[in-house]
Length: 498
Image (cartoon, rainbow, N blue to C red; front, side, top):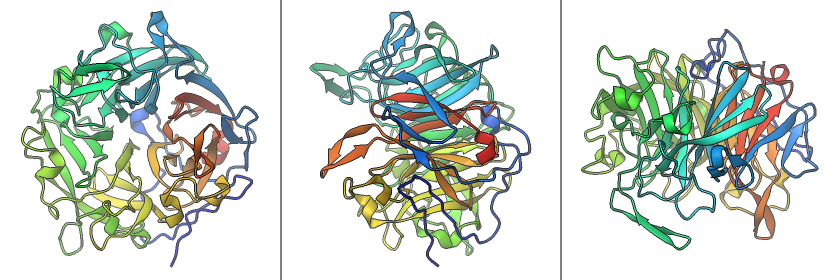
């Protein structure tokens, strides 16, 4: 039976009905424990009203919802004369700071050539002094409604800070989506330099001012093209995704040494070889290993598969990149393992798409996105949302109207306070923030209206990144990546998501 991903009408409404076989992860347990959300709640997935065009050309929202701009690259100021807000906003986490304020910690996914406004090297934040002013994190404080108060540098001298994850103790783990060796030269905008340190690590960024950060890699979590992660509420496991290809990336589990419980200051707490880093193996009924997630389709929605793990031989990639240390068929690969977010009982994991000639092994099925749920206790993984492939979604600029496209390319994910999901779309042409119920409907709740030029004569739009709710569920923060804009959206969230 064919499954329709959604139908976008010119009015902006959208809905998806997915056929479900088997038992899906319940939404009624504690939600997003790593973000401070809790309580036995269940997301309803009610349709949102039609999206209304924004007269300011920034963000289309349903009636009853409003936004404010929190930061904008090159426009808003960093505190203490540190410069302007950097570009390429990406993964973002938010925590309450106890003063009726919110702290938003934000990645900037930059390499030297990507833009004018990089993250400046500020004393006390610099990992690699040889790196350019490009990737890193900023720390933003707002009031309870998302109104900006201040912003400063949290870490600098890093590269392509893509996504990450909020910790149970209220910090942000930022992930470098790169694999650069010390001694590699770089050049951009007439400047040149040489990286002095290896890159491809996870770093911890706190709510502290710039001079009180710890710009030190957590080498125990491995060196590869990190995307996102989730810390298990047992404080003994971390689950990490890898956005890479040639060969396709892997999903990892890190287990703490016996007697260790994770806490603030991970880079100092953990030795470089602490614990065990393992890659995922999805097991089929006959015990064989699923070689790539793209061999599964919508027919397997709701069916749990057993997961086993195999240890990474060389986590710091001294001999070879981590994902190449495993022969095909000994691990389960996936094109673009992306967003990861915990609901306390398990982690939701996103594969963004796989349809290119080099994306798929022979016999696999092209798709425009998958969302999985990994159950910590049962050690099973279940496909909960599936976006069938639409050939029209392979190329930018083929349609005269955004309304002619279907949803594609889910990327960052967050669990709402009510247990449902919010996805950031990174597909072609139109770009949306999506409300998604695992095994159920998907609806558009925002659309990017900031055009970035044209392709084949039609406008193109940057992806959304970093959706994350305030702990009280009143504010959804989300970013437009290019130009870098952070938005705080308020409205009757509980009516539609609760």
